[in-house]
Image (cartoon, rainbow, N blue to C red):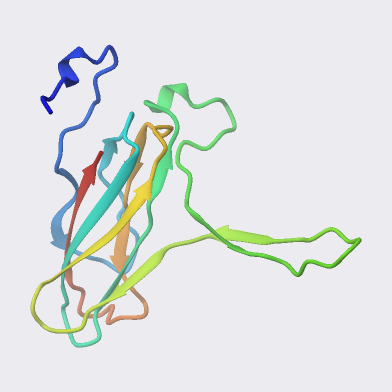
Length: 159
């Protein structure tokens, strides 16, 4: 099937692959200025992480943050520009009583299995064509070896 993207009245603001994090040494703190990229119009996203541990037991954390705003200037006063993913613990369902579930910000951890660079895929993650931007802050995990941080690159594919 021919590529007819040039006929789209709302062309996308991205081109695959997207470098979500250039290869660099991790720190114990979340990336201070994670790379932001447009994802408007994308239905799905797949991430590819390439991690080289700094020491045996090395691990990294990542968090997919999203924004429904194309630029910071559109964020209403008092609203957050970036949203963290959440995890949910569903409460017990009891007949005749309301159920309380708990949600908290969430992040994921990858632990290295060997000394050589490892490439892992995460996703696909459904975006539903409703988001404008994404960023993926990362850090050397406290579950790993913070004193000997590894190197991490993150590449994204949108469709």
